[in-house]
Amino acid sequence: MALYHFHVTQIKRSASQSAIASAAYRSGEKLYSEYYGETSDYSHKKGVICSEILLPPNAPPEYADRQTLWNALEKVERNKDAQLAYSFDIALQNEFSLEENIALARQFVSEQLVSRGMIADFSIHKPDKEIQNPHFHILCPIRPLKENGKWGYKQRRVYHLDENGDRILDENGKATFDAVPTTDWGSPERLESWREAWAALCNAKFEEKGLDCRIDHRSYERQGVDQIPTIHEGPAVRQMEAKGIPTDKGDLNRWIRSTNAAIRSLRKKIATLLDWLKEVKHELSQPQQPNLGQLLGDYIAIRNAGAWSRKAKLNNLKQFAEAYNYIMENRLFTVEALEERVAELNGQVSGLKSEMDASNKRRKELKDLLQQAENYARLKPIFDEMNGIRWKGQREKYRQEHESELRQFYMTRRKLTDAFTPDGKLPISAWRQEMETLAREHEAAYACYKPLRDDLTKLLQVRHHVNVALERRNIEVPVLHRDKYER
Image (tube, rainbow, N blue to C red):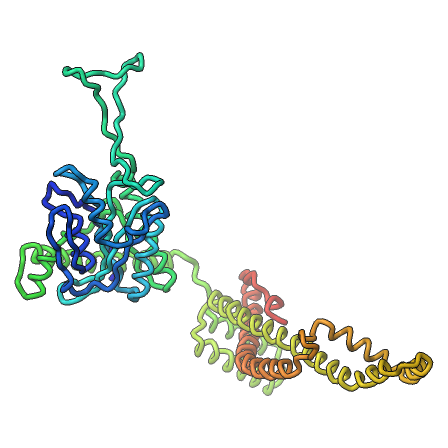
């Protein structure tokens, strides 16, 4: 089922974290930290199927190297408690292929992060025995880059001013100020927009693939969903659970899932029952319309009332039996169902008829082109022979003798003007091949068209019988009239 998980934390030294170690773990690489003078080796890590760094235009090209990038950041961050990077942990979807998930992750990183000037180091992890769902990690330096590619400031000072515009001093004589972030990357509003953007990307992909599932970035409470949310387990808990070792978090999540499933099942049954009761109540409150079988019976009764011979009455009965068997076989019990079926078949018949008309028109054009090409080939030698006569008098005499053929040649050449290829030839083989293809397609279309047209004819006949019966019962005949469907 579709899964939404989008978690953002900070990599910071105050928590004994290292940007180099974090990047090495997520990418499954061996990286050396100049700041700590130690190597983080995760090259043995399995499940990392894609890892790359996307840079904004103003970033130095050498930052495309993971070790260079994060050592440069560690170097510029001098505070022992420095906040180093934003760490994204985002779930991918089991309903998408590996290639689709990678493309979706790369699109999100490019549109939502890199486009804002952020450097994004992202890695995609596929499911295995320890990892239950595909996901990807993103590391982004908190410190922004200047336009010249140098590291900028994470915060700027906004001084407190009095009514005269002078700085307010504290008891030690120092100006007071607020430290304001230079970017909105760490704001709740930006996080909300990223969470919403990821949900929108996934939902658009679900819709593109014709899947009904959707995800929502909002909490159950904000969605108005009365459901208990599970808790995040983390890789350590998942590893223990995969080895068959129960954990408190695992037990709690199993209980939550079981409870939610029971609640969903109960609500579904209640909703189904309420819908059924609503439909029954609505149906009973409506005046009951005669069904098609009754209306056909009325029509035959009307016909028999005016029939003078036994043979005519038998024919009427035969007509009733054929019409009644037809509506039963096609499960048409109401006037509305009949109208819907007529409209549906008419649309299909009209569509196929339009296709065949277009095909016939093109075949006629091709037939004319081939005839003109044949005339051109037959008459061109006469034209060439005339142009080959050097003496004017003889050429004029020849033109007069072959005036009719030459006039026909000129007319044929005008019709074929746009058909000549650059080398002066006519695509006769291509025309003939297209003619054959169109003939086959027309035959296939007609094979579909004929039974639908015959079916529509039967439906129109039934509808005529029904309309006669409705008029006799003084019931309003449906707005859709027979002449709309006849071609």
